Amino acid sequence: MFFTNFGRVVAWFATVAGIFGVVAGHEFDINQAESVFANMLNIDASQWNGKQGKVFRQQGYIMLFCGLVLGILTEISRSVAGRREE
Image (tube, helix red, strand yellow):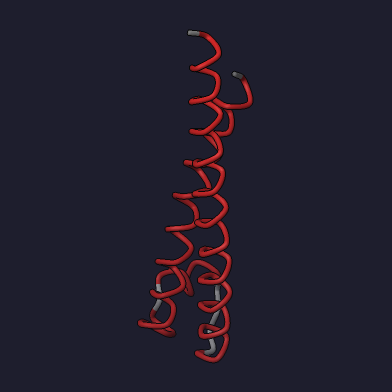
């Protein structure tokens, strides 16, 4: 059960981080040089903002997908463990 519980925590973290990455990527594209994330990362050129926004979105979607898959697998694991205990 340790890995099931640990997997649930990691799945939630990955899902939240993925959503954050997708939102950050879209914020880069919308606000360009005035982006909050561009100021935090010291990115000045709007060309770099577009590239960084694309990278954030790609990584965010990957993290979101992995988090959802891991969450589904941990729910299956909990279901199978519950059947064995009964």
